Amino acid sequence: MPDLIAEPFAFAFMRNALAAGLLTVFASSLVGTWVVLRGMAFMGDALAHGVLPGIALAYLVGGNLLVGGALSAVVMIVGITLVSARSRLGEDTSIGLLFVGMLALGVAIISRGGAYAGDLTTILFGDPIGVTTSDLRVSAIAAAVALGVTLALYRSFLVLSFSRAKAQVLGLHPRVAHVAMLALVAMVILASFQTVGTLLVFAVLIAPPATASLLARRVPVMMAVSVLVGSLWVFVGLLVSYHLGTATAATIAGLSVFGFFLVLAGKELVTRLRRPSFPAVAEGG
Image 1 (tube, rainbow, N blue to C red):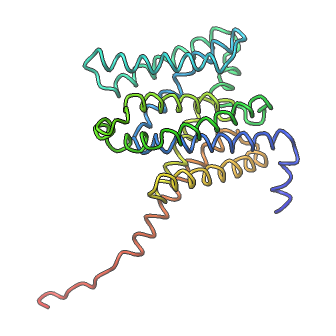
Image 2 (spheres, one colour; image 1 turned 60 degrees about the vertical axis):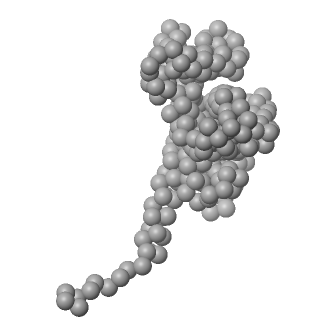
Image 3 (cartoon, helix red, strand yellow; image 1 turned 90 degrees about the horizontal axis):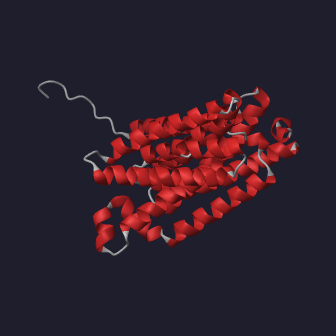
């Protein structure tokens, strides 16, 4: 058993993949906790796909993928804001329209390049075992920024998660806090796409914080539990993918989602076992 665990991490590329995965989980747990608390999962999913055109275009022309993705994220956020403000459509409808449109545009750009299947797979599903030192630096910077912004805007994010009106009354500038939160989500997605891809990053962003919400009430505790849970599935996912030959990013994402349902089922079982049972009262008793 010890050999099964130690053997994969004798290779540098596996150690890099583990480091990148842990950094990704740290950043995504901090940001994903707010996403879960605010019910912004659809927005997070849309942003994860909305960065695709910029990344695809930068990939084809040999530009910086992060810059391309960032520009695409800005277009996505501005587009959602404008459509919501200038029409009678709700924010969900605006997000849905831009989500599908940006995804379709990204796929079209990649298909125009000629190497459709390979390029699309790399961008959508990532390549954890191909992580470089430069990718690790980007992940480390993203984790540091996520921590810094979370600490700096903690009160604003916390109040905004429960009441936008109260945040306004308290002078916490909810609109600015909302934009800052969206920017954090976009940053985590961009910093993580090499590790888990633009398609699967959503699972890492949502599943560990959602699992933590079943186990903790206080926000700092939720974040800590999310980091621990996410880190566990990164480690286990790398082991499983190495020994079974499965796709690494998909294995990590799938285990993260599986972990949520496992904890949910366990919590429901414990609740039922603790529920007091009352003996039936005989008729006429």
